[in-house]
Length: 165
Length: 57
Image 1 (tube, rainbow over the protein chains, first blue to last red):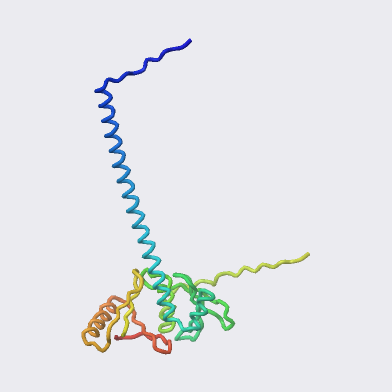
Image 2 (tube, helix red, strand yellow):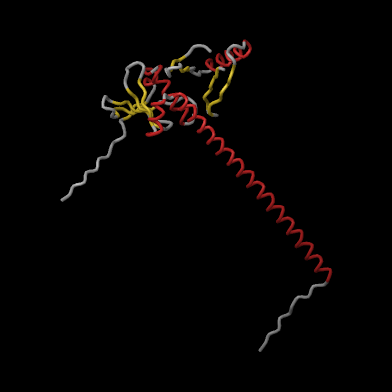
């Protein structure tokens, strides 16, 4: 048995109205989409610029640091991501590791870390600038810098022993 | 050509100036005074690589 379904038949005027409404909805949707995409593209550009600018700051900071390091210290930094400086007051050796905080170690005569120091400039600087400021501080006012520094035990070195049984 | 390099949160900014030019030198001295007044420490590096804290341009 076939059940016949009544199909709506639109008059020409109603069809024109439906088309006009549909076109209007389509236009509105297009406008929304265009606005949405424009905002997203603008947001992405701002984000991109910010990353580029931060990257640029980092690069300039490292360039400046490399200009202030002697060829020996620059080679040490390039090879190991740290460089050693001598404190102007005590003559002790300090190791400045790449970073922006908790990155300075006081070394013993054998070159092992004794103490970990944390002192940073009072403004937010990139790693290269922070390390340069720490170098300048230790070489010109070691006592002053360490007087305001926080002191920590050096990072633990984990020893793993393999035993053949 | 002398250079003043200012390190702040925007990264480092270089100000080149001719130390033999009185006007440029005066501007550099003014910049130096302004920055040290607000707490910047001025350091200079000698030709041998030694770092010193400096009190003037």
